[in-house]
Amino acid sequence: MADLHVELVAADRSVWSGEATLVIARTTSGDIGIMPGHEPLLGVLESGPVTIRTTGEGGGTVVAAVHGGFISFSDNKLSVLAEIAELADEIDVARAERALERSTSEADAAAERRAEVRLAAAAGAH
Image (cartoon, rainbow, N blue to C red):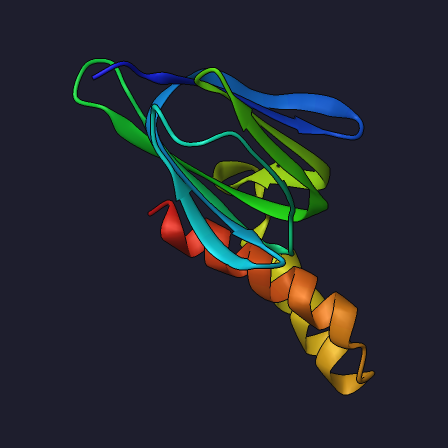
């Protein structure tokens, strides 16, 4: 089976690029899994983890916390264009936990969701 080429891009940088066998992302229509040969699609991303199953020796998994943006797939090329994206190994877990505590005490639902997504992505990579 052919691989799909993935570009994960945030507003301020290219986050990850490579070949994959599967990408799972959260859209406004629900979670979606994309494999090589998937029908073309354009979707709106929700805040959530994006999981990329990479190819190569032994394969691996890349997990990122993504907040908003778009996902586009055509001709075995997948673009994840996020407003904010952080790879799981870039996330400062202690800082994210403090942000979650602060947002909960301030009743800031959007900040609470961002912190939860960052912690879920960090936990999913380990």
